[in-house]
Image (cartoon, rainbow, N blue to C red; front, side, top):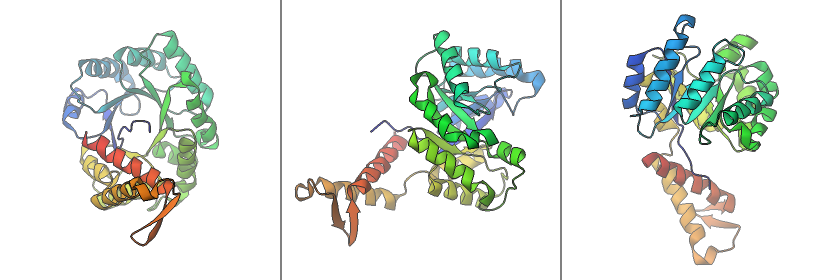
Length: 291
């Protein structure tokens, strides 16, 4: 099994706010997106770029995954953002408004030509109608090593803007888009994190949307405030009952009398080998979180 990196809580931090970048070193998020795009005014773009890259180079974020979000391809800042991010060596670079696989291949070639660290991954924002229509082709780019694609990030605010879909409890207008993106990500072996929840004070609504995202199959959720981290970490982690059940399934298939069996009975339920594979991932995720 490929080593699992928890991405339960992925917190956006404004790149122009030096205090926020410092505070982020103490926030218990699995990943931090240090943002040069939406959270930064045009006249602060260059300053934010310098601050973010200096913060990444300085380190001190522990085992948090560091991701730099650039401005979009075609903006005046993109080329400098990509070059500076590559030199800073974050865990990943997040590209906004990816609408075609060619974008990812082009960016991958650019990083290769700059001799960027091969460990740097690319994350792609899925936030345009074209991206939804071509989401499987975009995910398929992960099979080209030059693309470096490792994760999708749903941009639900931009999708709502572009489609005029409304935010309603349960997100019925967006469910086909969310599930299509999840299927594409899983088909091509990449992670995917859910979009943000805008109402910071609505704890019940946020919790419900986290649970919905988990049940749909997302690996975690993007967040806009540190107060959302704890709930996301809890919802997207296996609970004690799930972990106990997973370990019991693994142990049952490890029994000599069950060697070679495709299905067994456990506590009155039929359990197949595929359930053992699912259980193995649950335990691996719990161990990765504990680490």
